[in-house]
Length: 198
Image (cartoon, rainbow, N blue to C red; front, side):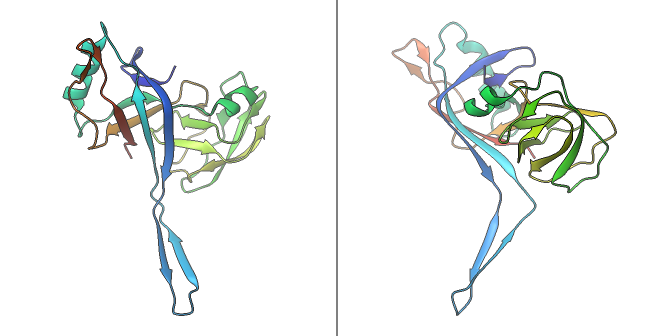
């Protein structure tokens, strides 16, 4: 179940449509001959736009969460995985990676007993950045990730890759910080945008 995580449970579930986008700044310039030059910056963050399931008796916890966190404090959500990716996944154990430095686009997985499909979101245990697997990794071996590592990985670092990938986020400034009631009963804050806290 994907939604806002309070440390022990999801307090507000995401409902479709869900949009998860990569914000990776690229600068373009065209020459007089109309040749295009581009440069990609190293910064990257995930941005998720969704609606939340309307709430009734449980609305107080979400209302309190919105008001206390506002636009400035970070909190945790469970990262939505692509349905096709989740159905293809066969790995059952928590894989372990070999020690590696930062700014790399590949990590070596020492233990892996199945398929981790391309498009899987993962999070390493030693830092909060969420990455995406760039190519199928079946069994142990080199696994491509996007974006490149932000933090070096110590020896025997584990990572989450199922519905347990927790992402640190903040509310975007377009989100209603408070409550809206539909028919005077259901709390419905409308569309909510979360930006990864990087």
